[in-house]
Picture 1 (cartoon, one colour):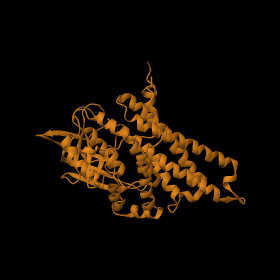
Picture 2 (cartoon, helix red, strand yellow):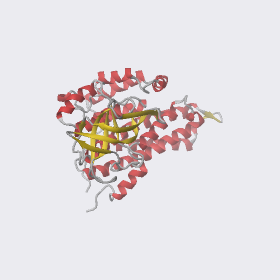
Picture 3 (cartoon, rainbow, N blue to C red):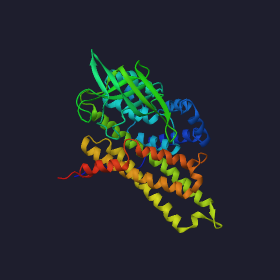
Picture 4 (cartoon, rainbow, N blue to C red):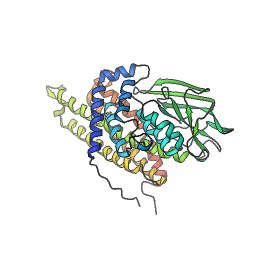
Length: 387
């Protein structure tokens, strides 16, 4: 049977303070025109804002205080991720702190954590996850890149695509096959690579939602460190991705919340037939359905933050699959109706609604869309494992 997970939706005093601090910072630094300026810069995001994340403790959030971190948990990550979603922030907080930080916490040895966690917390070390390959789509176990033992270290060859913020990362977390066939679950290692090391070639580009990503080619690249067991690193990848899905769920809730607010405000001011369009009952029903979808997603985001800590990998994967399915469905409904109820103005670059829709679309596709995870859940026999 599915275990009962106690759920308390009330924030503590410290959590409320964190939420308010992040919201104020992003409110000051992420006006629509400011965001456009960051997007047009060389990095595609703001170094100044990144430094302020560090000052606020956001970059060290999930790391232990003894290692130079903030000592936050999954709930604190959810709080920050939701605020990042509300601002559709461009900085590599998700890739560095949530994903890269997850690999450091779960896979790095004490010496590696001691060397890197303080640098991550200070904003000096930026991490990116180089995993996806052209043939792999959403399958985490589909890896063609190879790593071979060379003396006391490892040498990596391969190509990785859609490496989010890979063009500004200082270090890459790279998956490569140490043994077995292309789709074997065993034989996938996780390695830490200096982004400036000989043999690393990076081509950056802008994604549809204004973020930055890169194509990465590795030719005879010597790894700095191994994260976990090089013969069986996929369980660490699965765990980090599950935690990342929880953060993505919270980010999506933040973005959907703002998109819904914008839509309601527009319906109150846009007139047709000498009446605000919000006075038409059919559109009121649509807006109410958007609110229902948003609140369903919010509940699943809370569930994800708690379920990501499940130690049973099979159960955790089914739970996170259910999160991805519901969040994806809510994203599609809220996002598409935001565009439809705004009309043509929502499709212009000069209006914020379209930018929220793009970020939500990319959010759904990151680590697999709703259709993919529905198949995963069905193959697993549903959310509740059969007796």
